[in-house]
Image (cartoon, rainbow, N blue to C red):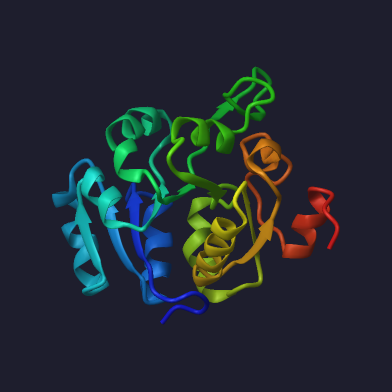
Length: 217
């Protein structure tokens, strides 16, 4: 069962390198997870062994099914996806894990957004009827399962949002995924979570994560 906040119905929009490991963590914690995909029938071999708490569905059905919904599609597909499910996300907490990642001319990882614009703020502007929390962005996807399973709660996972209750809920889901939540504040000042930010794409203990973004505590 869940370690913190009771069972949730979670819609995962995207069943790739982020959605699959995080969804498996949440299933193990007792939540029900609907994995949304453009082609849900292709998920049969993945969903089958996960038990009765997991199912595959279209993006629209997954958005409807979850009282909490996570955006885990490639960034290039995000705007088109939001256009199709925006109404279904109204009134819900939306976890944004999409990353607008690019490379500078000298080969450095950067955000592709305009200077001063954070991904969390952009998504919140696109979803005015939802409560957006940015999380699960800065840890390399290939480590999400192993570190959340073998070293539970040793590693920090940053989050940011403008609503305290929503952040508390997402913090509990971070705990359920095997990481320790570290609150970086509001969406306007969440650039540390984005590509090119000081914690992207790295893992830290909670104390080292706070120190890296010059937080106290």
